[in-house]
Length: 90
Image (cartoon, rainbow, N blue to C red; front, side, top):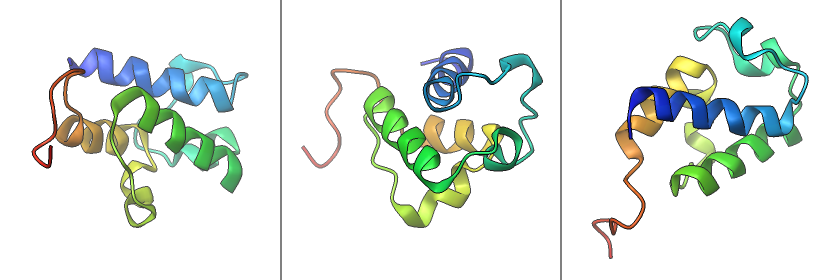
């Protein structure tokens, strides 16, 4: 999965919870909750969307790591695996 693919998939998951957002105006270094006025339920739905899209479990302790677009991309690039590739625990 390329960086562009990861970014696009993250933005798709965000647009599911914040359909009014303008992708090109997202500052990758600023907290997504602040930029998009996401409440805790919106953010949780975003996390669920990321889980579905990437097949990655994101524990609550890691939520701060995915708070910005840059952080989210870094986190998911390190944890995501291509579809069909089993995890090391399998």
